[in-house]
Image (tube, rainbow, N blue to C red; front, side, top):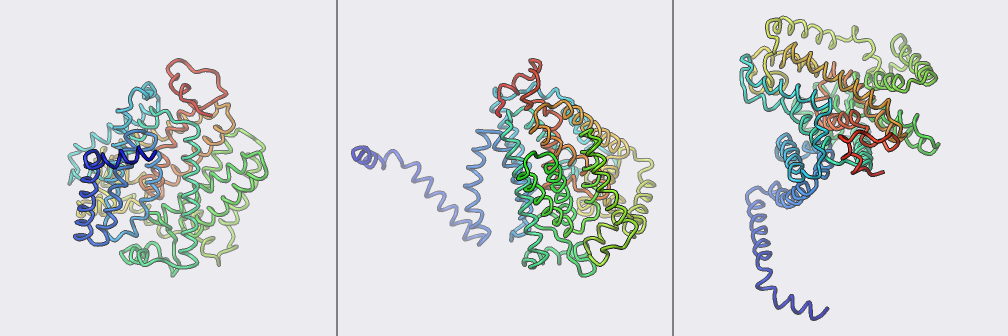
Length: 493
């Protein structure tokens, strides 16, 4: 050993000079960043080498890029605490593009035949339609198309290709679901800290930058945790509450039932402190859909017996009205008594007049914040959509909205068919959770644009591919035709 060390020592001046040069260059680059950008430069000097290592990892293994994407969906929310503006959308674009490029580099290991799936056909039709919207003559500023096409279709299309062809294992699905629940648990704890301890300086700055009007109502804070806003946080908390409730029903042991029941309570209180009324429909619609999927009359009866009295108490009594969170839930069930909902209906009437002769809409990127930024005087930017479907309607017209809703219904139908054919207990309960959560979020999207925001959109993009192609991991089903042999070759229990 001593001789080996001595040999390396003698050889180091000539053999290891490239590493020395690289070290000097990195040190000089770090010094330049710190000297010119201060604190932001020092952070960048640390993140750049880490980013390079992560990029190499993605190129070597596409699944790593997919895992990184899931983490990124949640970490993006921390950009609020940065001292400089971070182009989060561009970073996600780059990550997905790099992961997609990695699947091509590792093409021999990919099951390209799965691109013939009904899911990919439906997504491709929608993606092509949104690309054609780039040539919509009504669009006042065409470059704005790039900002909204990403949550509309581009990211979904890219994720679908990656998840379909990559040899994902059962253990990978476990990791993704557990990661989702873990980040959600941290988000709930952070919201409790906002509610009962207080906000950070960065959070107060965010509120004072125009967000207080929607997050400080009657002196009450709508908690937003480290998500983009309270609506997004409330939707995610309702979604993971639904998942935890379903897992409570589905688990066999008392210990695991108790664990998921406790998680459901934590997540539900996180939903409550968000003050997001429409998120209640994620729970109501998602749980009802789950019970229908189970085709279990006893559970359906028990669920209806438990839910109906609670809904009636909220709708027709004033019990608990002194509690702000309960009163917010109550107002979700009586929308015609809510002035803000009536304003939305009035806005939709105005939009119907504008869009009467625009079957293909005003063009992608003309409404919401992007429209206000690039074409503030256009009619599409004058009226807030306040709904994901209304936003789709404004920008892609009645043709686009019809195509989009038809695609969602088709994916749900395919998912139902696939889940009903499953024989593996673990896989069945996992896919039931993902399918019911997707249905609940789709219902809620009428009143909030949550499908177009992180982390909800990232979770939905992946889960739709999983539950529509869940046969790939069913260990108890009879052997599939040869077209699916790649899935079974890479199967891991």
